[in-house]
Length: 134
Ligand code: 5GP
Ligand code: ZN
Image (tube, rainbow, N blue to C red):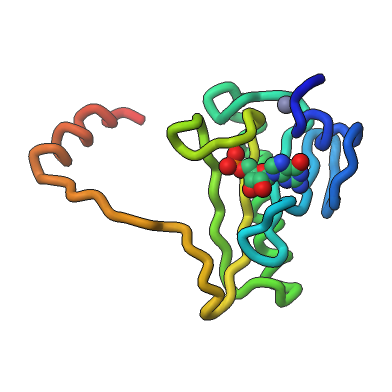
C-alpha cells in the first residue's frame, strides 16, 4: 500500500481520528483551512468519485452530514463548507477519494471561492443540453 490515505484509513499510519466504522475513517486534516477541518476517508481505495460505487458515495456524504451536524452542535462551527475534489485539474492533491468538512465561523477569513465565470445564455443552453437526463 503506497497510498497515504489507504494507510491512514486502515490504521497503518497514525492520524487524529474523530470517528471510525467498517467502511470509513474521519480524521482531522493535517493542514486545516480552519479549526476542526475533517476529512472523510473510505477504507477501500478509490481514486475519486468516478471510481466509487453509488452505495459508498451515499454512505460517505451521509457521514459528512453527520460530521457537519456534530461540528455545529459542539459549537466548533456555525456553518460548514463541504468540498470534494476530483482530479488534479479540480485541485485534488491526494489520489484517494475524500470529503472535506470545513467548519465556518463569522469573520473567519477562510477563502473557498476565488472567481466567477461569465456564462453566456447560448452556452448555458448548450451545457443544459449536454447535461440533460442526469
Ligand atoms: P485535496 O486537495 O486532495 O482535496 O485535499 C487533500 C487534503 O489532505 C489537504 O487538505 C491536506 O492538508 C490533507 N492531507 C494531505 N496529507 C495528509 C496526511 O498525511 N494526513 C492528514 N491528516 N491530512 C493530509
Ligand atoms: Zn488509497
